[in-house]
Image (cartoon, rainbow, N blue to C red):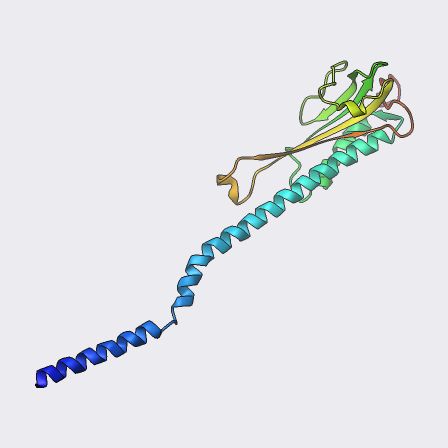
Length: 199
């Protein structure tokens, strides 16, 4: 009889402790947080990388617009002025390093049939286009006005994510813009003395 009572009491105590354990939720939050934390960190890091990449892309667009627009606002540009324009990369890309940024400024001439060829071209960090090179494949038809010229500005910047570099390769942000000369039909490129000009 005593044995039965002892077993019943032990069973009762066990059931009470089990019920208390089932009702206890003190560790539930910690367990849920341990599941959610990696997802939250991944979202946060992805947001940082995306924001950085968008900022770099905007900087490349701004740089392209600057070098192209300044060139198109001139009747003549000298070699040293073009070199100075390429120097805009450092402040335009700040705080990102502009070391690997490449730029090309090209005066594209159109003949009386609207065929595009390179009048002159200068580059920084890459090769410029050769004079006389056909450009119909690089200039959309809407810009090919017969007997005129257009300034084509191009920029490229390779961006390597700081955190997700193991997940993705270098992303090349490039941009191309076209500008109509403002003060004359053609923008001439001259030597530093202002002579020996080409258009």
